[in-house]
Image 1 (cartoon, rainbow, N blue to C red):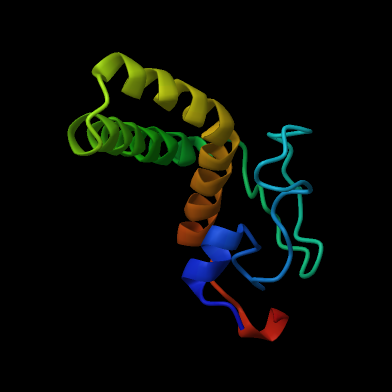
Image 2: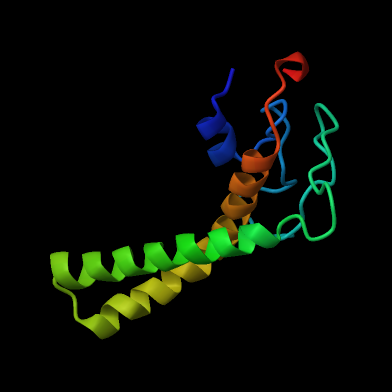
Length: 121
């Protein structure tokens, strides 16, 4: 059985921890923002109410902000790149990871709000 942390990172249903929250892979740019309405395994509603994922926007902002600070600090102060090169690489990396940040924020948010139910696993 998956732990809560593993389920969150794997972006699976918080109730059964088996069904995928998203129909495509995390690094797929085909339908990047499409999310399953219900869990394909336990039928948990993955969008319980309008505006449910509003809090996930704040999580995404925080995660992305800290990632950007750490990334530029690593490349500028640890590796020794100049600031322009560090930011240029950051733009490329965040351009690839933006879908993952969006999805992981939603996964964290729903895992904070929906309890695990062992009868559905």
